[in-house]
Amino acid sequence: MELSEYVQKGFQMLADPGSFDSNTFTLLLRAAFQSLLDAQADEAVLDHPDLKHIDPVVLKHCHAAAATYILEAGKQRADKSTLSTYLEDCKFDSERIELFWTEYQNNRNSLEILLGSIGRSLPHITDVSWRLEYQIKTNQLDKMYRPAYLVTLNVENTDSRSHPEISFSCNMEQLQDLVGKLKDASKSLERATQL
Image 1 (cartoon, rainbow, N blue to C red):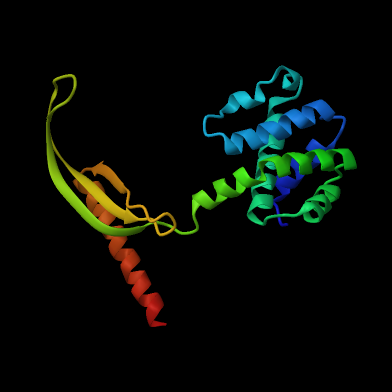
Image 2 (image 1 turned 45 degrees about the vertical axis):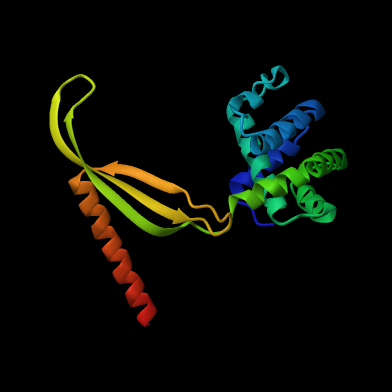
């Protein structure tokens, strides 16, 4: 499993019993799983009283490292030997490896469902609609007399077979810039396919 140096350093700090005793290690590990799997989770998961003595920068670094490794392990459907090998390389002791494996097993199905819902491809634009809007006044009753374009992109997400709409508002200059960039992209694609 290839992870960045930043993640590896965070994981090595997490493995150090001097930085994280058994209790704080378990709390941080559960917080990492909770922040990934619970849509309502926020930074409060790291506000546990037993984590207050740890430097917030170190705490967030180790939390990010744990979450990254959890996602990578879930993506690769890591088994116990794969997970143990990497954790041993990061200087985890056998007790922490077992704690990690147990927590991973408890959350594995939810993690796979989460990763499956993210999708594997970008949405495809199927249609574009637009309309001209003319703003005459603002909320403060100031006169504006400014045209704006409301653009709606109909997209198709091939993974979920859904057809959401993406809407945005822009002025004339922004719309011309968008059209120019789309023309540049189209020309680049044409050149690439001619090679």
